[in-house]
Structure formats: C-alpha cells, structure tokens
Length: 459
Ligand code: HEM
Image 1 (tube, rainbow, N blue to C red):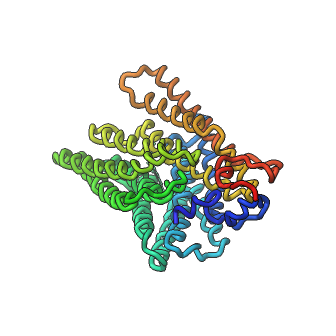
Image 2 (image 1 turned 45 degrees about the vertical axis):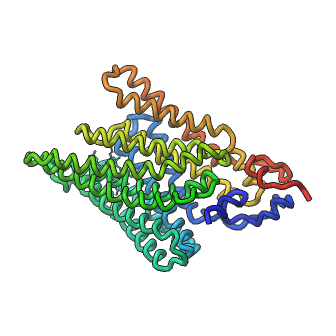
Image 3 (image 1 turned 90 degrees about the vertical axis):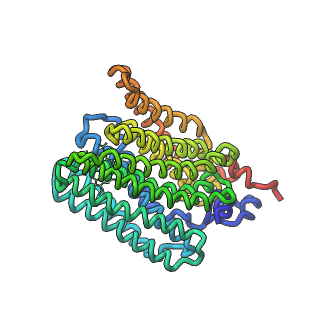
C-alpha cells in the first residue's frame, strides 16, 4: 500500500504512469487523496500565521506565553491531528473515504476552528464563558471523531493497519482527559494545592499523549512515504509494539506526576516513590520513541529520493532529545515545562513535521495536472538543507539560551532573539514554498528531479 502511494509520480490519486511516460503532462489528474484535509490545512495555516505574528511581535501582543502556545497546539496541531487521523484511518482500513458529505467535513472543521478561537480569546481576555463553551466545542468534535474512528475500525476491509486506528483512538481518549483538565485549570476549578501537578499532567498528556502518540503512530506508517521508501521489513511490527509501550509508559508517568503533586501538597513523604514511577514511565516512553526513530533515521541517511529527508531526520532526533530533557527536568524536580522544552518539542518536532507534511501534500492539493505538480515539487527541491538548517539552528539557540546554567542575561536574551528570528524566517520560507502563486507553466518542461526520475525516454 505504502509502496504504491509513493511509487506514483507524487503520491496517491495520480493518473496512470503511462501518461507521464508518454508526456501527457497537461492531463487533468484525479482528486488528491488529501482533499479531505484541505479545510483543516487552511484553518491550520491561519493559526500558524497568527502564531508567527505573535512570536515576531514578542510580548507586545496580549495573552502571554499561554496564548502563543495554544494558538499553535490547538489551532495548528490539534486541527491537523484531528483531520489527518480521520483521513488516514479511512484509508488504512480500506474504507477509502469518510463516507460523509464534503459539507460535513467543512462544517466540523469550522466548528473546531471557531471553538478554538473562543477558547484562546476567552482565556486571553479572562472571559469565563467563551473559554468553557470553546473547550466544550473542541472536546465535542474530538469525541465525535473518536466515534468515527471506532466505526471505521469496525468496518475495516483489512486488518494490517488496525493497530494504527486503535492508537489514534487511544490518543483521542488521552486528549479528552487532558483537555478536560485544561478546562478545569482555566476555569479555576482546580484547588491551589494540586494546581501545579494538574498543570504538568495537562501538558504531558497533551504533548506526549495526544500529539506524541498520534505523531509516533503516523510516523511509522507515513514516515516512509514522506521519505519515498518502503517500510523496512519487521520495522512496522517493532514500531507498533513500541507505540503501545509508549502509551503504557505515559500512563505510568502521568500517574507518577499526580501522585508526586499530591505527596508534595500533603507532605507525606510519598514524593520519592512517585518520582521513581514518573521517571520509569518516561524511560519506557523514551525507549519506544527511539525504536520508532531508528529505521526512519536510517532511511533518511541512506536514500535521497525526498527533499523532506532532512526535516524528517531532524524531527526523529528532536523527539527523543526533547523527551530526554523533559525526563531529566522532571527527575531533578525543576519546573516541567520550560521555553527550551517547548522549542524542542513544539517547534523541533511538531512544527517541523507539519511544515514537511505541508510541502508533501501541497503539490497534490494545488497541482491540477502533472506539469503544475512538477513545478510545485521542484520548489520543494530548492534549498531543503538551508530551510531545515535555519529552523534547527534557531531551535538549538533558543534551547541553549534557556537551559545553559549560569549564562548571563544579556547573551542569553541575544541568543534567544536570534534563535526565534531564525525559526520565524524558516517557517515563513516553508509557507512561501507551499503557497506562492503558480504563475505561467510550460507543460513541456520537466523541472523537478522527482518527475525526471519517473519520466522515461520519449517513445
Ligand atoms: C481545550 C483545550 C485546552 C485547554 C482549555 C487548555 C488550557 C490550559 C491551561 C489553563 C493551562 C495552564 C496555564 C497556566 O496556569 O500556566 C495550559 C497550559 C499548557 N497547555 Fe493547554 N489547554 C488545552 C489544550 C492543549 C493542547 C492540545 C496542548 C498541546 C498539544 C496544550 C499544551 C499546553 C502547554 C504546553 C501548556 C504550558 C504553557 C506554558 O506555560 O508555556 N494544551 N493549558
């Protein structure tokens, strides 16, 4: 299935290869397999631009760090996790499509987008009801998706990828718990003694659970397509077992977090055993992440078929690095969510992966024939190393500025500023590659290395 998807000119839904070989580059193509993701991608781009504007303006805009974190984690990340998990589940179960009218997909996407807007503005301006209504709307859309995923699993026409849908369902359940906790934190329902523990549980369940488990699962089955390679023999089974272990590790870790927080608040000396539980859970999660990362790193190193390989390699390096940093911070009892950790996981892993996926799907979504897809793919092949290096240098600088003990304030601030500037420049460059107008296209000219590889000699 994977081989077929990336074996075509540029992904599934292509006209047949004969047309390419015969040079029918103006032949209209069938709809993209990612067409159902288009509304969510649009919403995510709007929130992505809002996050970039907030980062560029610094503290001038209202809402504090919370706002920019949730513009990204809800507006961009959650919208895409929701949309891609349902689309992949439909395809992996062989059901093919979601079997709902396109208008329903648009309606759900807009409901999710509006709920997120209510949540973030409600919290930013301190308005209780928009926050409550918005959070409830988000949870409703995710809960409805959970039902859709279960239905798709029940109707599956093959069982090879059932584990994928199962893990997506688990991640959805984790989201519902974590978002409920977030809503309770935001509405002032959580008592002061356990506030910090509940906040850390909210962050970890969302970042490593909702986003982490969905992304780990998707990387196993979609990572090879991004790299245009086949899944390594045996790697899928090892990785699927690893994702199950990651889930168990996260559950144990979250229990440790809550128990430690309770132990601290009542001072009964339970902190030590709870920390052991917490660190053991995180260690299991970390080991699982490494199992998923290794075959992808190997493939990114050994094959040069995709310009996205640099981004993907960076993603699967930052993921274990971020989890390891988090584990050390939790172990040493430091506040569990620093700017450095946010940049490693939210930018190094999730934003970087999203930008890579955006470049992967854009030619399929915007290119209506082979010639225009070719132009769009050729753009992604321009300067991929530079784009990736800029983003990752930015992440490293912010991380170093935040986590180096004893670094004086002025150099730390300078590093932080340069780091964020590089992140912003790289994000804007990715968006420009994806969204720049197509212009006039010469159907006779082959531009991308990918198209050149698939085009045979004429005749
Ligand atoms: C309905 C959805 C959500 C609500 C109502 C919500 C609410 C909250 C609240 C009230 C806090 C604590 C603020 C504080 O006391 O410092 C918080 C922090 C945080 N949440 Fe959420 N959240 C939601 C979804 C998410 C998601 C989906 C993610 C990640 C995937 C996430 C990641 C975080 C992070 C990283 C922080 C720490 C922010 C910082 O201080 O830098 N949240 N959230």
